[in-house]
Amino acid sequence: MIARVTTLSVQQGKLDDVVRFARNALQVIKREEQFRGYYGLADRQANKYVVILLWETEADLEVFLQSPFHRENSATLLALLAEPPNVETYEVAVHS
Image (cartoon, rainbow, N blue to C red; front, side, top):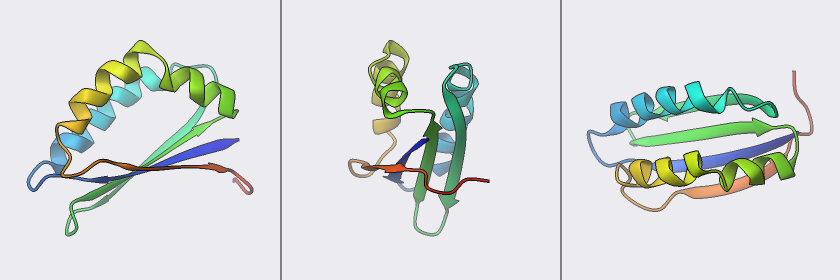
């Protein structure tokens, strides 16, 4: 399993908008057959939001990243950020 971890530095006062965006986007993402999970972690004092997306394989993640849905919605999310996101990809070594 693969985890894509994205740390977002959110504009002041926009964190609730990011959370709302994530909830709406998740309704579409979770329909993907190889999607394995989502965690959205908020630090309201620091205006940070961390997204952990779990996919069966790295190839499945890449298919999602190239999808029209991801490309179209990325611009909406980026408009809420104070700086470009930090993105890292990991192999999930332990999962429960």
